[in-house]
Figure (spheres, rainbow over the protein chains, first blue to last red):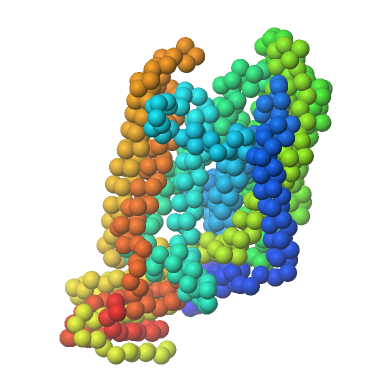
Length: 460
Length: 179
């Protein structure tokens, strides 16, 4: 096929200008599913060791009781709830990329979305453990679910904590099924090239997908509906999480901006985590043709936008605390910045408000090492944001005699570190077992192979 | 361009052609449909040209989404209402049946049931999981090739073969689709 001048011009507008043949995508993506190298095994070993730490400490807490955590009056919610909110927040950008940007037809989402969606599923899996860890007697955790017990006692459906149970389980179920559905055609592609045990595995989990017209037809139609259902879910889940706080009367929690503030923060932290994960993946697997500066630029711009929203929310909280004239509110916010936890608040303000300012510069957005460093700051900053909201607010409520200081115990710190390992464990397995870049979606945005020069668009 | 022809089957036999180009595939489908055949297509990604050539409208999977969503919404509103009335307890001075918080359960269960029934819908409509694998299949369909499959017997099979061949396939296979 001769390449016409018009096509060369159009190629510059394509998301992946270096890709020409459809089966190149299979070659490049499926080569990631081969025998892992030393680096992977080292990372995987470290993650597995961390999971061991996680399990051990949790078991220790189950045996000894919740007292081994640093939680005590007045701070009854500490690192566990902080980390829960952190991981739920991380999850959000995956659904944003896979569903919201799908509906908006963003031309840069295809190569990132599979990794982002996997991140969502694993982040919710991590987050979901924390309420169970936090309740202490985890063997009673099924009490959270409404079931017909002997006395027909039901949960209080007016409580945001019950809303949370529903929101998180729905989010996990929907994002996991959405993720699996998107994977099926790509698993089939892996099946058609694989040998040995992988072939058997992929044959089973691809469910006999062959890419027939009927399969694609229903798949394509259903995907739009699933995206349309998942889109409001992105907004709702973190709103519900924010109401865990906003519906309480604790100074620093009881504000109406919490839902949009949390959603923006969630997307902000999630995008940062996507970049943190995707940069090494791109380097290790040589995905430069798939993840171009264009993709990173687009994500950095979204991060910049959400960072501005988050920073605006911080400032408006301080302003309103002062403007309310409420002594309790004023003291609470003064305490945030200059009290016992000043370091946490300043970490949050610096990492989430000041550091992202450099994203205004195109040179930073186009430099992958610089972006990577910025995202590390944001990941840290967003964890501290939740720490400030949860812990600092509780430590400084109404009566001065009830004020207190909370120190996380080694069990809590260990479980926090272990949660990153648990997340990494699944993510590392994912990069070796499932196609980490969406093969089929990339082909949709590539120019189709044509025998004749005439465009097919005339057929409509 | 080699044309591999395997043994022609008896009744219910068909022919599968693999193409390199999208326009050849679309042309083959259109010519087959004009000649009264019912072709089936394979593609590495969902392509609207192929769907258009096969005369697809909207997928009935939308009905599954709607039914699931409505069931979920109804459940999400009815369940908290029923449990509140089953054991009436005033919490925080709110009415026994307090609509604003129940809207959240209505929404969450609408999304949950809607998504799950959409998934079930896809599986039912596109006959997945396909436990009996099709024998006539080209593993390149998930990589970069398009395919057209037609089922016919005798003289009609010759006609279909001719139409498929006219679009210069990379490969042609024949036989019954299922073993």
